[in-house]
Amino acid sequence: MECLVALGLSLGGSTYAHSFEIFGIKIFGGKDEPEDTIGEPYSYSVDFAVSPTADEADLEKRLKGASTLWQDREEVASGAAGLLAKARGDYRRLLATLYSEGRYGGTISIRIDGREAADLAPDATIANPAKVQVSIDPGPLFRFRETDIVNRAPATLDRKDQVPSPEEQGFVPGEIARSGTIVQAGKLSVEAWRQQGFAKAELADRRVVAAHDRDVVDATLVVEPGRKAHYGAVSVEGVERMDPEYVAWMTALPRGAEYDPDDIKKASDRLARLEVFRAARIQEAEEISDDGSLPVAVIVQERLPRRFGFGGSYSTVDGLGLEAYWMHRNLFGRAERLRFEGKISGIGETFQVDELTYRLATIFTKPGVYTPDTDFVSSLIGDREVLDAYTRSAITAAAGFTHKFSDELSGRIYLNGGYAKFWDDVFGRREFQTVGLLGGINYDSRNNPTDATSGYYADVEVEPFYEFNYGNPAARFTAEGRAYYALDADDRFVVAGRLKVGSIVGPSIAEIAPDKLFFAGGGGSVRGYEYRNIGVETPAGLVGGRSLIEASAELRTRVTDSIGVVAFADAGYVGADSLPDFSEQIKVGAGLGLRYLTALGPIRLDVAVPLNPGDDDPDIAFYVGIGQAF
Image (cartoon, rainbow, N blue to C red; front, side, top):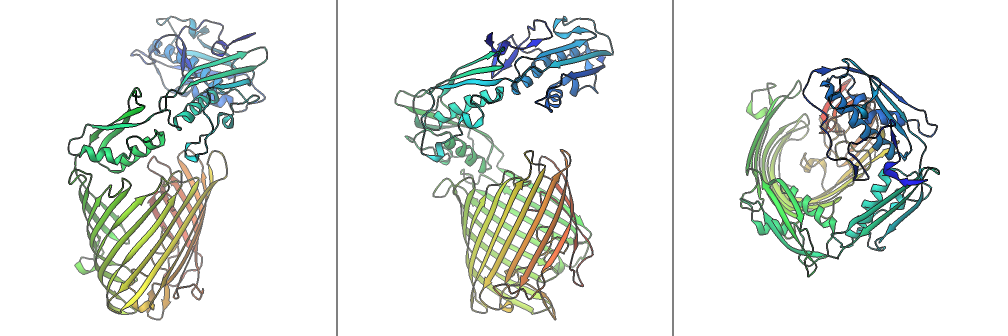
């Protein structure tokens, strides 16, 4: 016998007249009943039994996860009506879970004090505490017998318009007929048309029929593509200080171009990067115009233009640190950002002004220069650094452009220059005046920058410059790559690796500013050693080098949903020559880390030991931060 799949599951032998939705369609009933009412607290115990199935060991776990009666068993219900509402809601949730696993012939029974919950009136008398029995016979697995998509989108050679086929997602005869597979097949079928310019494509019909005598499902999806569309006028609503013509231009939705949903997403991301709007959405017109154009409306809500903040930190090594900033994020009506920031640290370790580390900076950013994805950035920075290797006082300026080529690829180029005074134990007092260019390319396909489990990161930077005091041309090069690979489907075991190399071509170490030279060591470099405390050893002390190699490897394990542990090893080499000759010792550190996983990223605590320490290196080092080490 064949019947509609939505009616193929028994609910405790009773007619369940409450609403139920599957495949995105409400099968029967009206509005969902509220699950919480105000009343006397009712406690209850739950006996949850699932008939064993040879082909699915984890089904009981998923069913318990879907049941609010089970999940809330340690809490009290809000009155008898509240307990009954939980039970009735569980019919729907458990049924949807069985369907999601391809089981359309099961039986669900939820009894409260021996009576089927579906048969109880909302004002039924229930014992307090109540005894709840949930019994589920999942029934057999159903597989697809026939699958069909009517009005399938034609194949395209444009890689940007290609979407995964429903067959690749399991919508094919012989595969388990999960409800989610059917829903996904419908979404992919519609998206295939939308990617080719059919903005109003929709799923016109979804016919799902189950043959319970054969444990098979026939599924037919009917797509209505509608008309092909191109972009019409872009209107802007809700602006107060922003220039509406500029907002429309920043969407980069040119009038007359073929509609593409990827363009809409990129436009939304571009508006979000302006940092001006509290909320912004792009709304397509309900219908395509007679000429084939699709008007688009940008609806925004602006943030307050001015913002300020301040913060502080303290460590036993660096003392007290204070910082503050003030920012205007819409200076002239086109999202121009002007930011002033100040920072001072080392308070308490010393009260001598010339021994404190401080920074004063002004940064100006103008988005949307030449193209919507190109920004102009300029900065003027005065700062003083007091480090173990050297003390630096400098003023620097930079101006240039950043450009976003795609979601993964971006580039930058700046003209920069500055004047700096340095003092160190090896060369004494020196002055440097430099001007140069800085260019870089960045590729980032990580799935999560603060806690990546897959993807790659690469950054290459080249900085040719000229130093006037000594009359030397030079060039600085760095390249860094990172890779992440999960060893299991749930991303609980992840292997991560990092490699960084650098080289300076030009004059000797004595005639290069120390902040251009390479140092290693610290939480983001070689753990087990102090910050920037790996360099070139000289009889008079430590100096930076002209070549750098760093490597790190981590095995990350997620123990629970909120706790992770990490085993790691780092190595670093800094050489005196432009090409490493390994005359200096390679420094190696290893250790263990604890991660507390939060929505903002993991809070990191690493404990590391140097495996080949020098006289000034610590016996053990601790590092605390937010996000993985790399």
